[in-house]
Image (cartoon, rainbow, N blue to C red; front, side, top):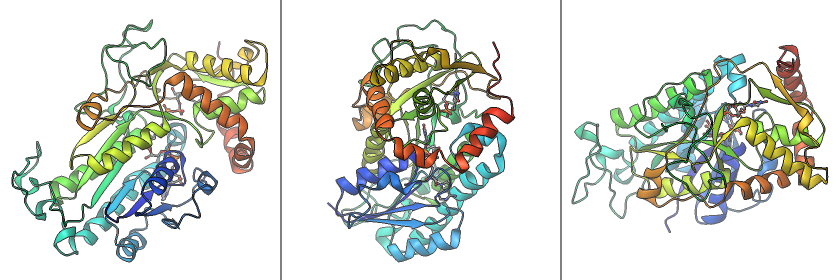
Amino acid sequence: MAKRNIVITGGAGFIGSHVVRLFVNKYPEYNIINLDKLTYAGNLANLKDIEDKPNYKFVKMDICDFEAFYQLMQDEKIDGIIHLAAESHVDRSIKDPFTFAKTNVMGTLSLLQAAKLYWESQPEPYKMVHNYQQSSEPEFIEGNSDSCHIDRLSDQSVDCRFYHISTDEVYGALKMNHPEGIEPPFKTVASSEGHKAYGDEFFYETTKYNPHSPYSASKASSDHFVRAYHDTYGMPTIVTNCSNNYGPYQFPEKLIPLFINNIRHRKPLPVYGKGENVRDWLYVEDHARAIDIIFHNGKIAETYNIGGFNEWKNIDLIKVMIKTVDRILGNPEGHSLDLITYVTDRLGHDARYAIDSTKLQQELGWEPSLQFEEGIEKTVRWYLDNQEWMDNITSGEYEKYYEEMYHSNGKLKTEN
Ligand code: NAD
Ligand code: TYD
């Protein structure tokens, strides 16, 4: 296995910490650098179990700091970037869109430009896609200029790549033309037992971007910049768009950890609107496994959708969480249903997300490994067993945020 020097941005966050853990444990010969600004969402406690490994290093840095990142590229001879750092919460983006544009758009651009300058300055093996040694059968990348037509490297080449992690939210919202649910066209290991589809359409890699929230607009913009760096400069880039993740270490502003914690503490469960919106849920370690496969074997300039065909209406998912937490805590069935509190809907709340990840399964052989009911059980148990982790986060600044978000703006006002 070749030695590699890889930066994972946002490694102290939810998904990033699972990616860092996977890479550090699986590739002892790689140098893994976790670059993170440690915003409210970054937490080094997520990585306690691997922080002393010799192939792991943490660097506190803002992805918007171009000079510092360019220096890091040179000092560490970086040949791979897995970019997860972002502002990631839709509700925060509605309150403060500027921070999202700055981090998600300008931050990504800053990384791209630093990587471009560094990789272009290197001798032959590091050069950009159009300068790489031509393989005997050049591959043409659909839709790109002929200067970018070679994406195979010689054995001696260092396969540098910029892998950008994005979301299905950039595609916009799908119609819910089957609100009662229909037999889905596909199932995977991750699909829930009674899995249904709530519409005929899915997000494909070819679906036109149509973001609605400031969060998804900023992610869409960053995706466009990444692809532009490939098409214009020959940057070896890959973009993936994943559905909603769940699992350990997720910041408790997001639906699943927030609700598990609230159920435990008998606090109201603020369900936006009627709770009818549909999300497609994937266990976070399955996303991390997909990132590993795509980073190593994905084709330059390609887009891959990641998801497990596992659609849920929010209210149904919330009832599963209530049932699971009550059972584990020894409460009678239905004990916490009274906590459900319908509140003012999120502005511009997307109706339905549903990812088609057939391409990834067929081309790279990725399959999710965990069935949804098992994943939820594991996740609920993890949050209940790790109350200290939760308490460290839900004190101080987070309490202020929660107060502001759910009380001052009237969100906790019961609607129905
Ligand atoms: P998160 O909010 O839990 O973590 C984000 C991390 O980025 C934090 O550690 C934070 O400190 C860091 N960060 C933020 N701004 C930074 C900056 N300016 N410089 C350096 N570091 C900074 O997010 P997440 O849920 O783990 O999402 C990670 C990525 O995956 C994001 O790009 C997100 O858009 C994407 N994604 C998330 C989901 C999901 O369900 N959570 C689904 C698909 C895609
Ligand atoms: P979230 O976890 O914020 O992810 P995203 O908005 O990126 O999909 O929300 C998941 C769904 O849960 C979404 O439809 C909004 C809804 N939701 C609530 O009903 N109440 C809440 O308090 C939160 C945080 C989310």
